[in-house]
Structure formats: C-alpha cells, structure tokens
Image (tube, rainbow, N blue to C red; front, side, top):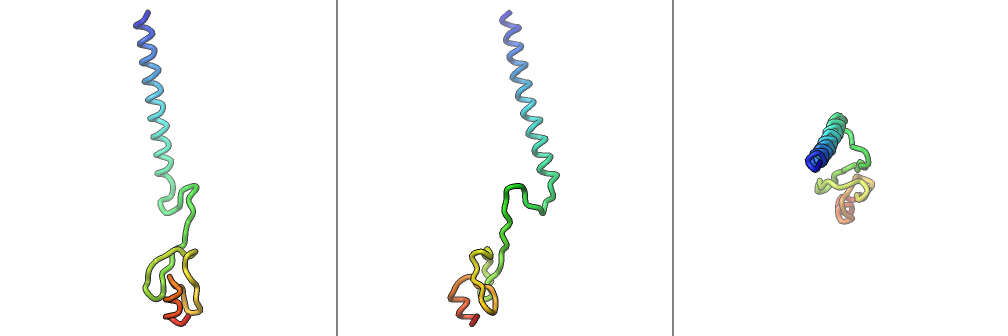
Length: 82
C-alpha cells in the first residue's frame, strides 16, 4: 500500500512540474510573438531628444526648450542665445 501511495505522490509532483513548464513555454512563445519594435504592456515610452549645444541625449521631460532649440541645461540655453 505504501508503494502505491509513494508512486501516486511522485506522479502528482511530476504532473505539476510538467504543467508549470508548459505554462512557461506558452508565456514565452506569446511574448516572442509580440512585435519587436512595440513596447510591451505596462511600459511607458519616453521621447529622447538631443541638446543643440553638446548633443547629449536626455528625456524630453527633462529638457529645456528655448527659442532656438532644445537644451540640457540653462547654461547651454543661454550660450546658444535661445
């Protein structure tokens, strides 16, 4: 009787392990099928711009907008006269 119980326990553990592996494979396959250039769910796209003086790239939300362009700091905005 105990051998039957041990065998049943081993089969249940094996089934759970295999079921989880199949779920992981399906999840990986669905993430690979998404378009490579498109952002995944839950990610936010941030536009990146370059400073007109030093050409450093920074997020648009952190950039300073002048009359003559986009700048990374107030000193560069004043230097460009914009």
